[in-house]
Amino acid sequence: MQFIIATVVVMCLGAVSCTRNTSAPVISFGANNATEDVVEAGGSKELLVVINAPAKLKEVKYFKKKVNGEEVPSKNITKFSNPKKFESSITLNDITSDIVLVVSATDKKNRTTTAEFLVKVSSQPTSKSNLLLGFNMLNSVGSSYSVSQQKVLLLPDAKTAQQDVDFMFFYGKINGITVAAPADEVVTRVFNNISYGVQTWITRNQTRFVKVNLDYETASAADIAKALEGSGSTKINHMSSSDVVAFRTASGQTGLLKIFNVGPDSASTLNVNVRTI
Image (tube, rainbow, N blue to C red; front, side, top):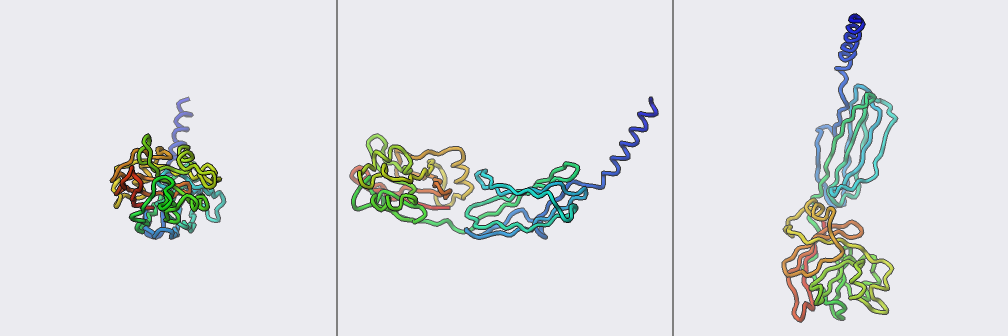
């Protein structure tokens, strides 16, 4: 019995010694093995992924992950012309916010290695300064704002462009100064008109807002995404001058708005800056 046990131990030790020279997969990005880069907003980034796997690859998987944690569908590769060395050029297109490319490699010994590459957006955010928003259905000054159009709209025009309207301003004794999404239930009562009221709209965008303590001028996309993560509502009540609010539109555009002046006559008008990222 002792001999048999000893023999088994020697065989196991021998097996271990045979595998010491086969390391887990090693992932690198490009010749310099950088882990991040900066691109202009709307630009693209091409990455060369190189994986060395002495024990041969079983699977390679990669996917994009946004800063807010949202994952873009992954791609799995299980067939390799050279299972010991995998190379692939991956292009990330239309980058509008910071994004992470995650790559994982599993070899035939079921050992998995994961690596990440961060792509940051460098361009200055688009700003629209000194917007004048009117009280409710004021005829001369619009109460609706479209982030994509960077435009204040009167209610009849807002109905025409309803798919692009992201927030609306109104004032009331209960809610005070309020910025709300067209999808918010209170908006249908405030902006009620038989012809072009919000209750007649087919598309009512569900913008999310959260009041923040971020610096309007310097806050990054990551700062805003973190502030909006798991929080936010379709309206912010009782706003006052100098308040900063983070928002995410239904299309995924993020940014900040800052009140810098409240007009007379029970907030008949409101001046804001809007900064999109």
